[in-house]
Amino acid sequence: MAVLLFVIGALRWAIVLVMLLFLLGPLALDYLGAKRGNAATDFMYSGRTYVRTLAAPTINSYVPAQYGGKDRADWVMLIGLFILFSFLGAIKVRLKRNLSRREVRKATEQWKDKMHVPAKSRIATDLEAKIDKLQKGKGVDHQELLKIFAETKRKLDALARDLSFLSVDVVGSTQMKESEEPAAIQHDFHAYRQLVERVFKQHNVLKATWTPDGVMACFNGIDDAVQAGKDIITELVSFNKSVKLMRTDFSVRCGVNSGRVYFDEDMPLEAMSERAIDVAGHMQKYAKPNTIAISKTIAEPLSNVAGFTPTDTVVDGYEVYSWNPAAR
Image (cartoon, rainbow, N blue to C red; front, side, top):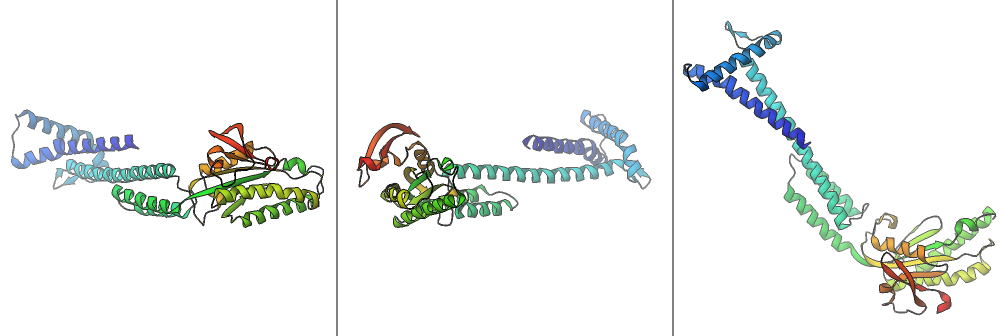
C-alpha cells in the first residue's frame, strides 16, 4: 500500500507540472502578452504545442472543444487533469486512512499480546468497540489511541488477582472403558464427576472447566487448590471400593500452579490464556498416578507441606515437588 501511495503522489506531481508548465503557463503568458525569444517562454509554448498535438485529436473525438471558433482542447485537458488530480487525491486520502487503520489494528493486537488481554473478556470487547469507533472517524487520533490503551490498562490492573489452578485428569480413561458396559461407564464417570465437583465446592472453587475426563479448576488460594487435589485422591479409595462398577480402579494425576492473572467473572475458564494455567496443566501431565505435582517455589510456602518430596523432574523451568498419600 505504501508503494501505491508513492505512485499516486508521483502522478499528482506530474499532473501539476503539466498543468503549470504546458497549460496554465502558456495561458498566463498569452494573457500578459509575453513574446517569444526567452528560453523558458519558448519551452512552455513548445510544450503546449506538443500537448495540443498529442491530445487534441483524442479530446475532439469525445468532447466538443471548439468554442468561439477556436480550438480549446487545452482548456478541456486542463479541466480533465484537474478532475484526475482531485480523483487521485481522494484515492490517496482513502488509502492513507486504510493504512492508518491497519497500523492501529496492528498496534492494538501487539498491545493486547503484550498486556495479555484475555481474548473473550469484557475488557477485550470494550477495547475492540472503542477501536472500531475511533477508526470510523476521518482520521485516526493517535493521542486518543494512547488514551484508550491507558484506560484499558487501568481496567486490567483492577482485574489482576493472585489465583491458583488445579488440573486433574483420569489416568488411562480410554483403556478403562474398553470391554465395559456402556451403562457402567456412564454411571462411574458421572459419579466421579460428582465427587470432584463436591470437593471443589468444599474448597470454594471460583471456576472450573471440563474436558471429557479432565478438569481445570481455579481457586482463591494455593492451599485450597492443593487440598482439593489431596481430597480427590484420598476419596477415590472409597469410591473405587463401593461406588464404581467398572473393573479398573479410578486413579488421577494432579498438577497445581498459581500466579497473577486477569480474572473476569463473566469469562469462562477455558477462554483464559494464562501461563499460570498452562503450567498447572503441564505439571499434571508429568505427575505420577494419584500424586500432585507442584513447583518447588509454590510448595515451600504452603501451610501444610507434609507428604511433599522433591523430584528430579523439571517442568517449564520449575523444579517439581510431588505429593502422594503414602508419604504423609
